Length: 103
Image 1 (spheres, one colour):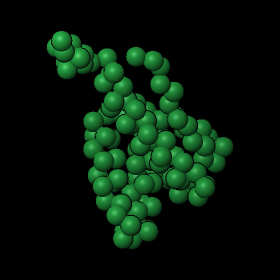
Image 2 (tube, helix red, strand yellow):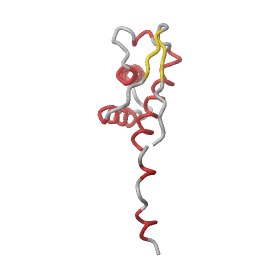
Image 3 (cartoon, one colour):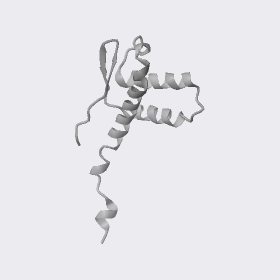
């Protein structure tokens, strides 16, 4: 498996590096993505995304509100993209049963 670079976000001159996601983070990302139906309250949507960013990057509670508004969506997308990348990273290493048994 190739080395995966962990995303970073800067808040107030401090750089925070993402932690390797756990199954719990995967569940939170899936739940958030499934709840974004276009009819969501924008404040609740942003708060949920900030919660994921805070946990994912290890940002202290008293610093998350200082994130530049332009960094919220990229930081959130980088987090969810990494979760999916890691979750699927070993799929290519699994044997292709159909291919192995084909005549």
